[in-house]
Image (tube, rainbow, N blue to C red):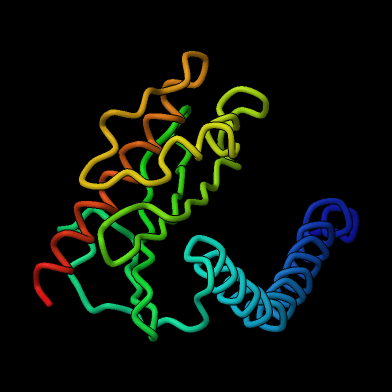
Length: 178
């Protein structure tokens, strides 16, 4: 092989492979440094959300239950007996997940709700996460089927309603098992 062929074909390939290896190493290193920080921030945000939807709560213990069978993501009991916080996710518009966290008192009534609609269309589907819509769920028990969806955000608001219903059903199952 001539020197010209080496410089034209082999050398650029070797240089690109070296660049890719260095960049891959740097990305892996960055991930190893930031992953624990991201996980801790997510944990703290989840705690803040639980405290927000169950006013006056301080600490929670996770309930060991079959989340898949209950159609929920997680269930927590407030350690002082104030109630429960259940999180459920359903698919909204465009396949994006709508995650809803519901605070439920010991009588089975919704006392707080938070919906992450960040995957939904801004200004349309995001309306399902606004307090003007979420407040309709306050005080309900048993099922959220009676709450109307938003006409321009049917899939997003349906995902919220399905999540609230799943949380209430899970509450009834969990509470019945105690």
